[in-house]
Length: 81
Length: 513
Image (tube, rainbow over all chains, first blue to last red; front, side, top):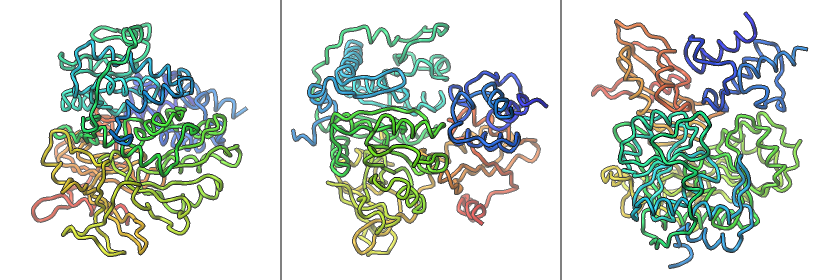
């Protein structure tokens, strides 16, 4: 499964409570769409650290890295280089 | 009229004339001086007056923290109205319910609010809807008054004489469909509390604060008013999702104050190394909104040795604040919520209404100019908590020999999660709407970060299939995000007394064990 699919499925299952892929656009802002709050974003970070074996530094906790599926995919790509 | 009793809108006018060019509010859209804010307030007030607002009319608002929020809030007061500031995370059903319950004649709502189209569809036609902020190019503007209609209009402040006893605000503390609880506060209530807070925090026009607390809750409400009443400045940061950005702004804006709930500080200490930042201008921190673990206070003290930390306690029913722990006592009185704020009396009373001796647990009771008028149109509930002018808080505590208060628990079953106070009944009502659910009980269970998280125990109907996702999806559709149960357990029956009352304490103790 691609990283994008893994992240999408995690968000759909845990925050939108559905497996309907059309419920989430990969460009949707988690904050603007009310999908995640501050504890939700921490849970996403724990998920990313576990699933992709990366360490998210405090300074990397910015919307450019974490506020949408697309941003996370790009962030993981950069971290894995 | 004494200065203390002067309505906050009148104080604001005086302050705006004294400090016209000083920064009042900085938000994501820009920086606004007292003069600019006063002009916006006058425009909102002018619009409301021209639209027929009579003194005492309620005006509901669903507006995120911003300069616009202050303009609408104070504009309502300037026109003689009563503010009904609603939770911006609430769903349409709650917003409509509160608007209807308060009999509001206007509803100001953020142009980009996710529930706007649903609200427009279902709003009583007698309520005028005003969208706040610039409309997006593709957004329909049908059926509501545009913000630009207000901001392009005249800006002469109406001459509305307010009395201290006039009703100023209604703050809803729960959205339970059947019986919303609206705390009614007079101008004197709010003025008195703001005065007390200013005294012990020693706030002046030199102060500025980075604010993350929602203004629609009484804690954030008091932060807004205390600063605007002295000529201070508010720098707004609307979420804590990215904690190091918050600390970055505290440092870069060189603010003197920061206020949070326990989870705010847990998040900041957990994700940010505060010693990496220059926080030398940060004079004080305040903490309220639930008991903070003494160990967390110790960590804050160690991380910020030169910053005064005010531990506080209060209730919406008391305008906001009831007690504070003087920073000098924070080590000696570890775990205490302190003493009564200036001009307020606090007693711990037993079930017979007698003051308890030191060490004995009783109910915190409070008396002062800051105590609410009652619950909106609910004399029965009002009489349960207001007796001979005293507020019975429902919170349990004891005092030490020096009169310092220590919280022992709560007698109500409200859940405190992060900055939110949540009625379990409201969540139970929503879950109960599902056909697959026979019975449900919702409780708060301990959580290191949030204080409590929400857990739902559900007894499914024997012939129905269901799973956790169905429940949570239904909650997401009908409840604010912070009210969705994090944990759901299906059980065969709920523990009950012989008379059939659900024993929630058993469910909670099951979790603790």
